[in-house]
Amino acid sequence: MADDLVLVKQTGAVRTLMLNRPHALNSFTKELHLALLEALEAAAQDTGVCCVVLTGAGRGFCAGQDLAEVTPAPGAAPVDLGPVVAGRYMPLMLRIRSMPVPVLAAVNGVAAGAGANLALGCDLVVAARSASFIQAFTKIGLLPDSGGTWLLPRLLGRAQALGLALLGDKLPAQEAKDIGLIWQCVDDDALETAAQALAQRLAAMPTQALVATRQALDAAQHLDMAAALEMEARQQQTLGFAHDYREGVQAFFDKRTPVFTDR
Image (cartoon, rainbow, N blue to C red; front, side, top):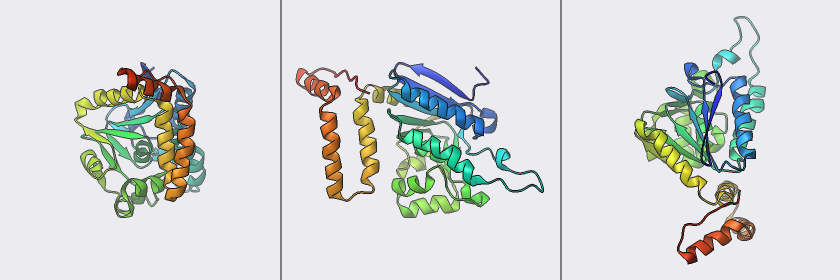
């Protein structure tokens, strides 16, 4: 339906969720938050989904918060942004980070503010060459939210993170790829094909191992090496009892393509 705030498409084991407020560059309202969270929950519960692609309708990925929704009328009291961030963006970002399948962002245009960090919070980001990333928060007197303060220094290091966060400059997709902020930059007309090909590749891989890898890499940021080695042993113990490990090893010996089924 054209009026749906999130358009859902299933191709094999890949579910594509498209933000659908193109007239407002897919900026977030309360209703869009609820619709996207509901769509993510549905994908998480559906065992037929092995990868999720998140993208935007029209010429933008997501312009962040729709400021019209949080701007008071002249003379009215300011809107309390704390509950907006804690009650809407926090659950959304944590749901993406805890999805039981890989999540791929296909950034088709501007990704600004919370929209930029929505993309960066996904497991992999593929962007069209005309796309851009903007940490626009300081331009309106705020700081990066939606996980920006956590994501940026881990993806880029302190110097690059501060440069992007303090200055709020537009970062073209190719530069984002060059500095390691995103995985891939492709020509505009190749974005959908490239994103779907990568998503289908991920969907055919051992899902539990992919998710465990994400979890381990995130957790290791807070551990010393000995603790990381212990965590790896625990994770390998669990994965080693799973069907996909046995299937992968047997396929290796049989010289055939493995068929992974765990989720």
